[in-house]
Amino acid sequence: MPALYDPLNALTPGSGEPHPPSYWTATAGAAPPDDGAVPAAADADVAIIGGGYTGLSCAYHLARDYGIHAMVLEANQAGWGCSGRNGGFARAAIGRHSYAKMIELWGRDTARKIFRESLAALQNVRDLVRDGGIDCNALETGHLKIAHRPGRAPALLREAELLQRDFDYPAEFLDAAELQQTHIGGTQSHGALRFPDAVAVHPLKLAHGMLALARASGATVHSASAVTACTKSGSTHVLTTPGGTVRARTVVMATNGYTPEHLHSCVRGTTLPVLSHIIVTRPMSAAEKNGSGFRTGHVLTDTRNLLYYWRRLPDDRILFGGRGLVTDTLEGRAQQRDFLLAELQAKLPALRDITVDYDWWGWVCLTADFLPHVGCAADDPSVHYALGYQGSGVSYALYAGKLLAQRIAGDGPVHAAHPVMTPLPRFPLAALRRHGQRALYYWYRWRDLSG
Ligand SMILES: Cc1cc2nc3c(=O)[nH]c(=O)nc-3n(C[C@H](O)[C@H](O)[C@H](O)COP(=O)(O)OP(=O)(O)OC[C@H]3O[C@@H](n4cnc5c(N)ncnc54)[C@H](O)[C@@H]3O)c2cc1C
Image 1 (cartoon, rainbow, N blue to C red):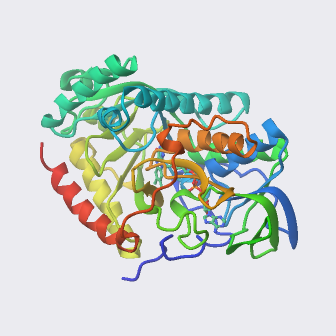
Image 2 (image 1 turned 180 degrees about the vertical axis):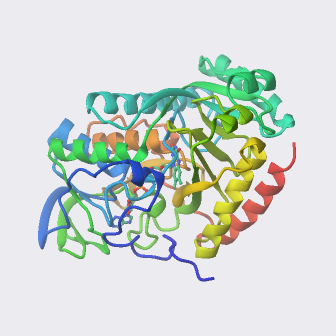
């Protein structure tokens, strides 16, 4: 079966495509207006490629905080990429490393700085939602990282102790009995690490809210405006779109997992787009709710390397997501949907008769060092980027957009020794990224079955 779309091969993710038929699309209501396709020719101070949380937040902060006119160029619709199709877990998270690994890599002070920034990013979501009056069903909750096998619980206890000791953070360890009594039952609830801070949101409504805020502040947001070429004439960037050409002094790559490999040299060989698939079930019956012991409103992940993430939605449906496919094929999509349902039922056997009403997928962005990066091209300080959220970008992408705006306006903070602010690394043997991913997935699957 041939692959359908892969950012590593395609020049753009489409042109004017509608949002995928997800639960979020079905419940978001009408999108606020945008500025349509780029007219024949246009000038902007800053041209931002990508209309997700990163691009919209950057445009909003440039306009509101610095009076700089930004033009967002989105291939499809605002929020069409990950921002309109994620699980809606806004968490304090930066990159993929465990907290112990952060201390090992950077020392305690830098690890603490990164952790504080992840909390600031989460607070930024709350502030945007409150101050911007964004109606995105935001719910203050917590996050539980659940031991999917008994042998994984002791590491969670150690992580809770480390968070309390080294980060002054009130994380808690819940043993299996407490977890099952208070939050969720089933066969794979062997204890949990509880983070008291998380916000559950409707991700597409949040993207719509950011679109409206950006435009109200003075930015323009163009849909159906895929950038197919990005060249430079003197000090002016020239971006080609189907509707017309945009000339700008500064360019921002805000394309994350949808970054076209060949659009600009500063991102070539730096991203690994990875598929993540979500199912949403029909609402649970009263018997299913009791049988599964699914009481919690917390957002949930487990201790797998190829982790599952799930939450109970306000209408008693379950959203359940995970990774697994390397390439996007029609056959693979159908298999992944069935596989995810079987995995949910293995966790919660009381849901043996539950059915799936929606499923969809998107491209998450990994980087070679498992960290997001906010920076600019080595050979051209007028080309900026923020990407690589490792599947945890609801809060950090919005925050990174703000950091980008500060950098572009020359208004720091540029955090000298901050690992997120270091240059985006290239993958070694970049041409073999997909082969490496396949090998890693085999290894991860094997590891997830042990311990
Ligand atoms: C299934 C799934 C579940 C997820 N769940 C969570 C979660 O629960 N919590 C969490 O924190 N994170 C989650 N994430 C990750 C999170 O959604 C992303 O990190 C975040 O939305 C990234 O935002 P962004 O604006 O950088 O990128 P995106 O929202 O992906 O936006 C990039 C945009 O760039 C556009 N683009 C690309 N190329 C071009 C071009 N040439 N011209 C014009 N436009 C272009 C694309 O069309 C796209 O709309 C999930 C991701 C997926 C896929």
